[in-house]
Length: 389
Image (cartoon, rainbow, N blue to C red; front, top):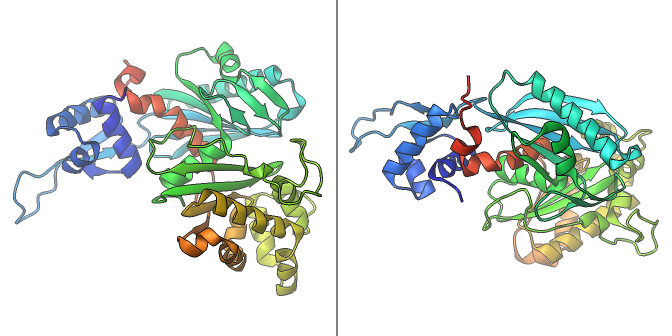
């Protein structure tokens, strides 16, 4: 159950700085309860309470201003991929305080061996960031389907993992001093965009990302309390766009991710190596009108059109965020996005926006949001005697 202190903290994380009067309205707590909760959060070093600004001609006592304290607490977020792991220390405001990347052939290791190496990397990062502020949690992002309690990875095709107890293996090295959470990477990216990026204000957000070895997706609805599990176990990368197409790792044929993963998209652009979103963005900027038109009519973009139209017609989002290697497509090919909307019967009736992602590190930021969940439920219990410097 969420405490009053946790409710106030979550409100400040979600909406940013506000007066105590505004916090009272947003949290639906009594004015006195907000005052006590604010004092407790300030004692823990999580927020600053600023003097009220006096405004002439305004009746009533001025309300103090509440804001998150930068770096007041942090978590370690980990993005696990087939060929690397990326780690970051992130605070409650979504600021990346420290970041590093390790090249690691995760897929070529046995799951337990890979996880023990990942745990060692996390341990090093914890030591390197211990001076920043109290550590409140560790959040891992995994490119696969998790159990409801996020403890076991059911299927991670890109890593060839099946029924792997991720959390318990990580805990063997790190112990249980702070909460350790594990989530689906695309769902965490969607969560970050919904809270802090291109998805803010959406009622039904569809998130689609192209990664080097696959396509990730997630759906988030406004009416539900947000968490790292999202609303659906969505695997849009395995939407069939060509029944006669090449075989996919899932065993089917013609899946969307075969045509739109980072490698396929880079090849379609004439790139010799799989490009990062920035490299793909640069490549699109260099293309002349003829080459750009050729790319728009490629199998890659044809599959993307079919996939997006099918997803919009089936899921009826009011906003679609294109992330990863798809983000530059959203930036540089507005005509293609217009074609998608023109082909959708849902978009003809209800407004649908197709937009590029706004966050460069949405998966890491989403993993941090997940790792902060326990703190946002009960800050006093999680921090205990730990006070920010």
